[in-house]
Length: 312
Ligand code: G3H
Ligand code: 13P
Ligand code: NA
Ligand code: ZN
Image 1 (cartoon, rainbow, N blue to C red):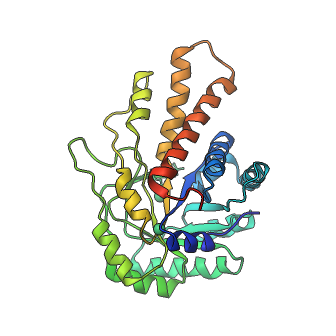
Image 2: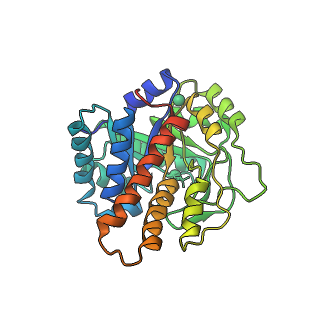
């Protein structure tokens, strides 16, 4: 069956790696993730946003997740697989997800006041733990787009708030803002992309060993942006997080790193390439197949260059 993230994070941080948390929106993407992670022998967190859950259909999601586990086992792989709610907006949504078999949830109270964030995160932790479901909360605000909400500027997590936050809420992991951001446009041309590993260090000093989560960690591979633009797309000046900085973070208490945008870019690059080369193609297998292969190759490469979770 599905696993929660507690053992995954403990093992990751004892062994200097982080667990991939890949968002998925359909069957092809789920299969690409599972093929990549079984071939790499990496644990995996399959995550769905509220929007993705609505798109797939909330009654379908648990069956896709069970299919993911069965698919991994059919390949002789015993990797742990979690089904995680990404950016859970409130307790009501969390309850519904737990009803539908999620093994892990995020409560994103980062836009609330510190006190209100503690209140809602504690409510979710108290509820979820009755069902052995792990809970991620967030402190600080990431720039970028999520579920159509745009935050203009990063508000870095304040290290002097983290100890009180995790002890008062009882959550199992903490997402922090150290300069990563959601979407494809994380930096501007000419910027020197830097995440604040110094703030991460300071946070680690306050809550030693506590599992930290990084959102907004797509690297926005130039290869996919180029393929999209060469094949009729129009994606300008998209710049992501350098893989080397994320690799350093993986060796620390960072136990989970979220990637959504890169999967979307790989998927889109694959489809555009097929259509540009063969405008008469109309068999979905002929364009979704190559798109799936691009995603799979990307996930495998990211596991090697960033997560370090290969064979874990
Ligand atoms: O953090 C946001 C994720 O990339 C999910 O995005 O709400 O468009 O599915 P979405
Ligand atoms: P990216 O947009 O960088 O892929 O971030 C995804 C994310 O944080 C999902 O929660
Ligand atoms: Na780690
Ligand atoms: Zn996120």
